[in-house]
Amino acid sequence: MKKLLEILRGGQMREKRVFEELKETPTESRIHGDIRLEEQPIIEILKRINEEDKKAIEAVSRELENIAKGVEIIVEALSKGGKLIYVGAGTSGRLAIMDTAELLPTFNVGPEMVEAIIAGGPGAVFRPIEGAEDDSEMAIRELKAKRLNCNDVVVGISASGRTPFVISALKYAKEIGAKTIAITSNRRGEIAKHADILIAPETGPEIVTGSTRMKAATAQKVILTMMSTATMMKLGRVKSGLMINLTPASEKLRERAKRIIMEEASVSYEEAEEKLIEAGGNVTLAIIMAKTGLNVEKAKELLKEAGGIPSKAIEIAEVKKIGES
Image (cartoon, rainbow, N blue to C red; front, side):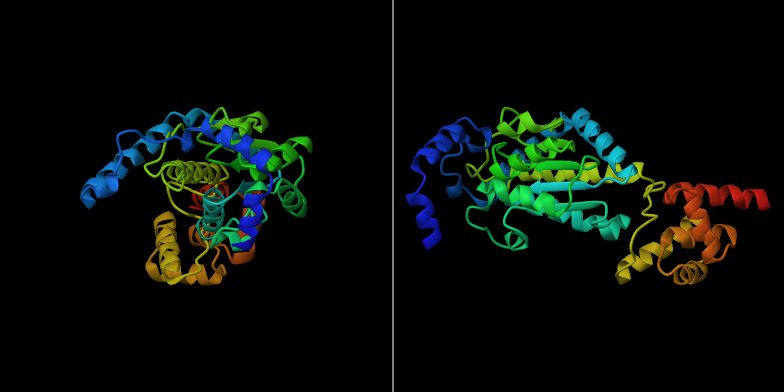
């Protein structure tokens, strides 16, 4: 609280400018006609929120071409050994971290390929860090610590399109030659000037004015999930809708892995379980082994032959199986 009071007492001139900027920001505008919505029955409040959520999905649908361009850039970068780095503050940063975390169990993709930076560091995932989103220098330090280079892609996420932390990250990324993508609900915001690809679902004002954890965040979550999933598909980590490269780190995922092996290799539950154990939990290797009868070392060689691309390796295994039959 003491730090917050110091912030409020200082920097009046700058904050007056910010006030003027925010007046023109769609996410800070007020929805007319919802005065005293809190006095309505709960079901009416929920219906109204649901109506606004639908608008977020519609807004995303109007940005599909730009999302596709973003995926193309990311796929190209990751295919050549580059990295994808998300940058966000507050809700945007938390959504970025969530998407990154979920890539490991789903596609066996970790920080060697995808990372996320949130203003304020890990502590900001659970509670707000005062002033973190305004710390432009911290954004640059974080990217330098990740060893950002010209082969990488930085995705900046900011509902308002003016978050200093995110804008600074994109500016630095462009300076060193990395590709940049911006996700915002304000296409006229400062963030647009620093993006190679702009993805701007116009979600408009929120039910609770300025609370971008609502519609704007819904749109961000959908876009991040779409982008990362489409990217993993194009990188060969999905085959016929199956997670052929998942990490079987829990009971549920282990059973899912066995089911995938059964479906892809047309084997029994017992054989799928046996191959998964022999493959050390690597679903792709287990499928190759079940399809061809190869041992784990030979299966690894085949995966290497396929350039480490899981779906391609399985297709080669299928050809080998046909050739031997």
